[in-house]
Image (cartoon, rainbow, N blue to C red; front, side):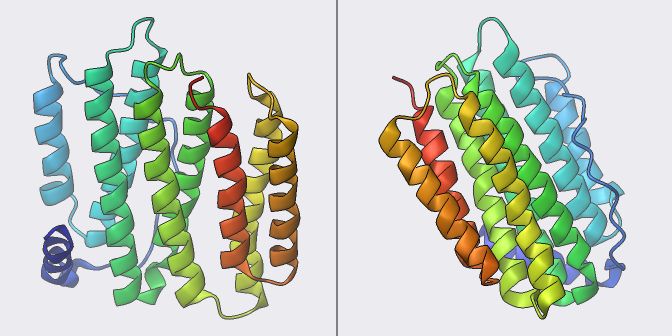
Length: 250
């Protein structure tokens, strides 16, 4: 049903499609009112109006969804940093984050399908969702375990939507060696982060897991050298899973 409504939304707003001119990614969004605080209800109404009435073009609507997902991430970070984490509040923020990022990804794909000049919209979403993933890995690492499930849910939202938009671009818009290098660099940036992040885990990887991680790196390198970006992304997932599983509550 959501997919049908989303498609109808795109069709109805086709006259407002504009050329892709996206603003640089902003990951310094200030958290808004938190669930349960005064102003939270009116904040939601204002944001709904910003997306559905004040954003004239479909591109602007998608950008607003992506912007608000960063605001939800800031709220998740703020809640997780409190001395006593309110799990119910974190549940709401996490759910809203996943919804907004998922909507932004879905609309980005439709925008690019309807107008290939909108590809920068998809590239920006990939970049921001990848940065969200890095932030959430850091939050998960410092979790006191009471908020682990919610942070993992948010991390999975970032990872799922990053994979969806990455593979969408590679499948449909990778035409030549320049494109192969461009999309390959996206995987390279994330694996670079992961190589630096893995050694900082509070509980070091056991030898068998270090072997798994090293094997994933090797296979990823082979896929990258062959220009097989979907394969290299799959190996990146294997490496990330190894690291995330090490952070499971003990």
